[in-house]
Image (tube, rainbow, N blue to C red; front, side):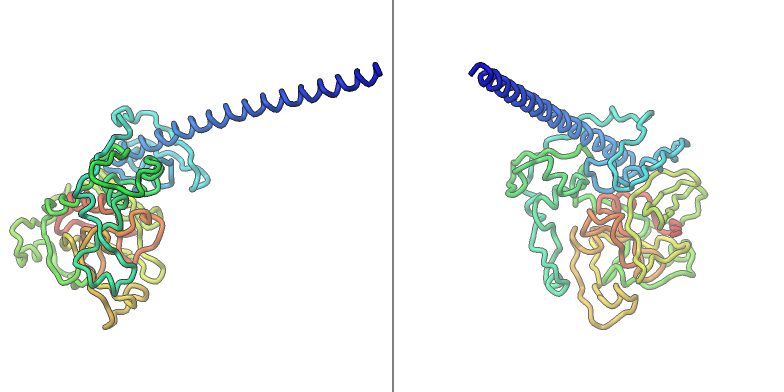
Length: 371
């Protein structure tokens, strides 16, 4: 009987020890998970701070998503290059989330990283029905945002899913007065499109229907222009634009000095962006777009097309910067999440907030190199 009790107590002792060990392990696991969550939150804030810094500096990483993504690394590299510094080596895995060297950057200027935005009635007025079919889109007066989240995400230069992540449970049903946490950037307002004062504004039935004018000089085109504000691009320090089709980045230069850069989407294999040297022909605000599927997919014009109305969710966005090659321009987009990743139909596509900033830096005759 004594031996039985000893064995019983030994088993019970081992059982209690095992339970205690499991409880301690669970506590440790819980602490690790909490610590990991804190690290993740800190990393998100750190990445967002860097993205906002670059966005404010006009070295745009495209959409802000709280990650050290591929275009954040590219924008940082160009920013450092503009300051005569050595660009950082990007991580081996493009889809990684590795923090770059931020020494020397005035990231303290980005404070706070997030602000509280109060939804307005105008945010809801810019929302409308947006059918997928070009045939149905052509029947509308304007191509507006799909829902308030779509518009507010664009206003604060950020990814829709990131906006939802910042505001759990708040984005399904939005009304005026709702408080949302957003990145601390200069808001993109649709009204600013009207305030742009380009050197030569154009009016046409559709932005991508402008004819080629490869042989005229800026001065010759100026003399025939009806816009007295247009000025020839003759100054040696005039801005120029260089588009790198390998990195999907657009650089703006004053002389040899890089002053701004933006993430872009370039043409596909079927309708490649035209390699070569071009010039800005003019700028169209709130452009209409001639949707010709055969032209877009195969570069061949057909008689079957739809004339799409203007709006922030137009295929060419809020603004078209025409080049002196018919059908080719630098323009906004209906899908800011796609910038830098999917192919365009031969044009150079930017987010709406970036194409407006680009338009403020170019004018009639500005050289544009696509290489």
